[in-house]
Length: 121
Image 1 (cartoon, helix red, strand yellow):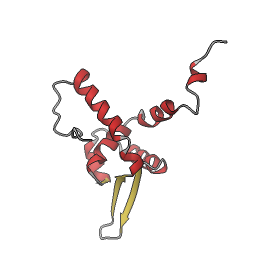
Image 2: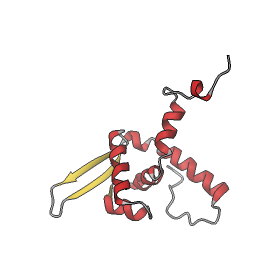
Image 3: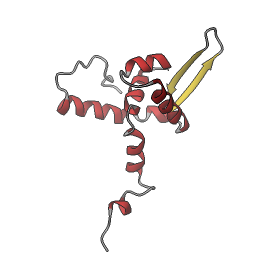
Image 4: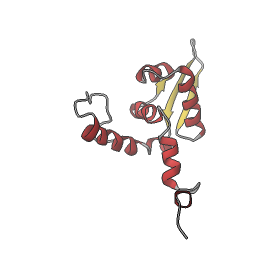
């Protein structure tokens, strides 16, 4: 019997499950931007030029549902909301770092690297 991709990469495949999460447009950039600490919605919006507020809101909601991000509200005037990586979210950083390393080596060697993850991440 011939094996198909469906047999190999079904719903219980860890690689497929991770790829589904990390391959969503903007998700790796949002996780990368939160690698240095909590971020407010506007900070994330500015760090991802081209993302619509609706898409950012949807991604943050999904990442919160997946336990990747925690949303904290502060009762101040004006109200303040911050998003921060959970331990689960921080465990994605080596994957994001590997993506950055690959991009530096093979895709964008002339890129300004000043905002990329530190080597220790």
